[in-house]
Length: 180
Image: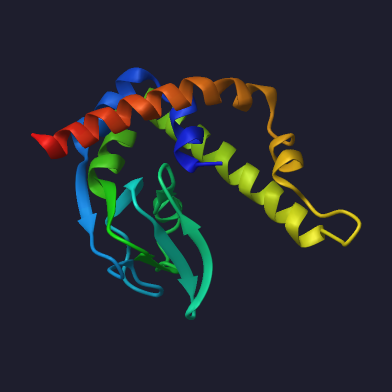
């Protein structure tokens, strides 16, 4: 499931407006490295708007991320250097929110901070649950998308409808800024 849906499902409309106002689009060419494994501290949080990002460690591909994925959320919680390289698989647009602006908003607006960190916790708990399923999988019990989704709490599933509408709104706003 796209990370942005976890976040947008917890945030309010005014929070999303702040994200649109605080960030900017960044264009990446095919094969352009956005984040380098072991590189310096990340300066931004990124949302994939178009295209594809490839996540790899030690040259081994781990994942391909597409529209709606969030990159750099761990840097908000952990100041260690990135543990993966993220490269554009093809021309890609990401929405970039500076770490400094996000930290200021989190400090200045307790309601936003509560909602944002709750969203990260829900997402990370779900990721941990999926990882547990994958690590514990046997030939008799291989996780599928259906039983991984069934692990989501009813509250999270209910928020996904709102999150999808908010993400559509977000995409219209940020893609519209390209045309102007």
